Structure formats: C-alpha cells, structure tokens
Length: 303
Image (cartoon, rainbow, N blue to C red):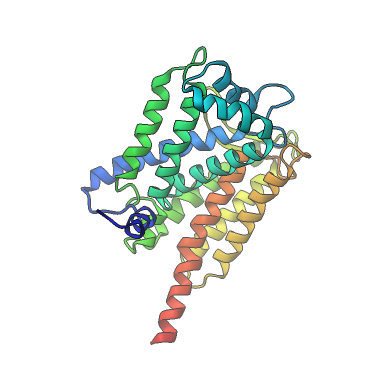
C-alpha cells in the first residue's frame, strides 16, 4: 500500500507516463475540451453576491440542491451552511473553476486538476442533477472525464507537465498559446472599434456552442497582443527577463478583472473567462522561460 507521501507525490508529478503517441494525443484533446468547459463556465460566477439578490446565477443553481434534493444530507449542508454564506462560497467556486480552466488548458499539474475536477463535478451534480430540464448523465460524464484524465498521459502533448518532466522545451506550447492570444487580440481589437473602451467588452466566442475565450475591449485586446509577443520572444531566448514581464503582466491583468468584476466597470472590458486566459498565458510564460532559465543559471554556477 503506498504511503501518503508517495500518493501526494504521484498527484503532483507530471502526467507524462509512457504511452503510445495517439493515446497521449487523444487524452490531450479530452484535457483541452474539459478545460474549455470550465473556461466558459467561470464567466457567470459573478461577485459580489453571485446572484443572491436576483435568485439567479450561482446562488440560483446552488439553491436547486434544496428545492430538488439529490442527496438529502448534502441538501441540508447547502441550505444551512452554503447559501447563508454565498459570498465566500462563491469566491471559492470562482477560484476553483478558474484554476481548473487554467491548469487543464495549459496541462499543468494535470492529476491534481483532475482530482479537483472530480470533486467539483460531484458537487455540481449533487446540486442540480434532479432539477427540471437537467440531464443527470451530464454529471456522470463530467466525473468520468476527470477520472480518465487522472490516469492518462495528457501531460505529454502541449502541456507544461511535459516541460516539468523535461520531455519538451515548451517552444511549441508557447507558440500555440501565443498564436491563440494573437488571433484573439487581433479579432477583439477589430471587433471593439465601435466602442473601444466598453466595460462589457467584445465577446470572442458564443453562447450557442458554449465556447468562449472571454470578453475584451481594445485595451484588453492590446494586452493579449503584448502577451503574445512577449511569450514568443521569451520562448526563443535564454533570458527569462521577457518571460518575467509576461508573467507579471498576465497576473496583474487577471487580478485586475477579479478585483473589478461586480464592483465597477472593468478597465479591460473583460470577464472571469478573460481573467483565466491572462492567467494561462502567465503560467505558460513562467514554465517555458522564467523557471527553465533559472535552472540553466543554477547549472552554470554549479559548473
């Protein structure tokens, strides 16, 4: 029986076990698809009251656990502990689902993200599976998808886990993310000309297929373009300076949105999905350029 320490080590280790290439590619497609699901769904977790005043949003969906119980003890917890403290609970949900989107899309600590996804999918299913017009199998499939990721090698392709395991230098990963940021930034800037600094921003995506990379105004789009250029350059240099700038800029952009959403008009015209995109670009920049460069500097000193 493995010790607790070895179990924790396995969850934190890169999800890069040896596997046929097509297995790893298939698992990567699943990982990115599930990541896009979480990325889309963070947008409607809106502080500060998370829908309590209107009875909608996160509050409304959480309340379904009481109105249409799936597991009565869980419904009791929701009614007496969760709903009376919806604001701290809502922030917790926003942080968890943002982390799921960022970690799965970038392929970082995939096993840990999968474990977190199993727990979050179970909580959602226990809240809404018996509600009208819901399909309980959707939540079984969400849980199963995260279990599949937990035991997969989805960190071998287009993933920070591959960089952590030294199976990749991350240049392809950085190029793909920079390309996505560049395309999004260009289309956002063009689409925002009518109202360049709109607080609601221009949506890159649609509610019809439930896929979105966020909302941005012109300033938010320019930040994406700058991050794309920094990431491309940082991945092709031995210096981590540009990567550090990308990390700081991406984190500040994401945090600025979380600090403003629900309280004031966002300066970048974004939403929680856009914040997750900024965080993802910052994370890729950190592992592709900043952390490896520090490792190279340490090797030079020891040599």
